[in-house]
Image 1 (cartoon, rainbow, N blue to C red):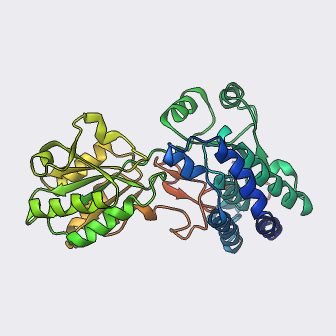
Image 2 (cartoon, rainbow, N blue to C red; image 1 turned 120 degrees about the horizontal axis):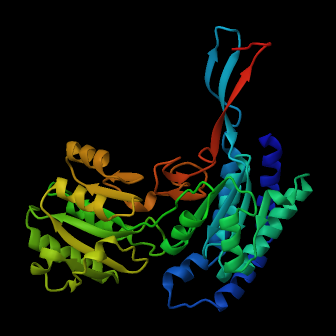
Image 3 (cartoon, rainbow, N blue to C red; image 1 turned 30 degrees about the horizontal axis):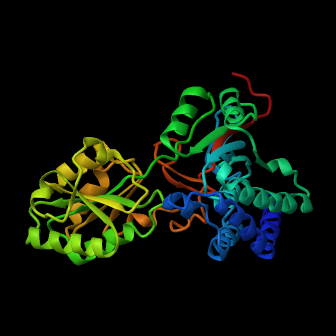
Length: 393
């Protein structure tokens, strides 16, 4: 089946290359109405030549991805003579609601389509022109290869109409993915009987152990803030209070981060050790996803306490430990309740493309049905196939 699907994707790649300046031009019209003071929103919305190139790369990687539809997961020969098999099949129809990012219109639909699904797209009004030109190219690629345009549907509807579509399942979706703020996710969870896959907030933590390479830690922390608009950005850093030369190391870290234009806050005891830290002791601060230049530093008494703080406050997305002690790293990665857990590496790698998945439709922060970046192979389910010859029980 996916040979034909690959023909569609090949044509889509060609169309993206041929129309990249038209795509950028439509995006410029969206950007003209965007509040540029909201740096995270503006960054997510902007499409330039690099963004188009990334869309094309996603399509090309998807073409190369192995087709697993129909793969047998389990086989059993029943004593009565039947062959019982469990096989991989598509979900069916996926409904995704997202904000700002026009590249999702390509990436999410590519993941769904390659996995044999249909997809319903609902982007934010701020990216309407960008999304419509991309869907137009999708429809051209589909129709030229004998596929119905309803494989990729874009909904240009009001908020009220979308809420009705969610609550009444107007489009008969088999799975819904709300990629947005807590308000959207809460509405979907409370008002829809469609199975929900949560692509939740980031609010990622990094723990600097007392056996850490501190220069490595500095580099990884800064990289965690290299893009503020993404869900894999770093927001909180826990430093073990038994760190050798703690005050000097902390002074060096704060100076380094401020020199790189970050707003560095302290929470709790750490404020006594450095007067350059901005103060914020609101307990809700530890649960907040910033999507800004803000970063918070705090002290931890032990590895166990750091794990407890992370599990209590993070969004369940990504967390990292910096340590030279492999046993501590293993304990951290085993016990921290996040979709991606790192040892001596940046949370910024939590991404379908970086994980070799060709792309992602979302990054799931729940445990069912997959967790972390969801690529082509994760957008499938299973089904039992039983072949008999008149058997009865």
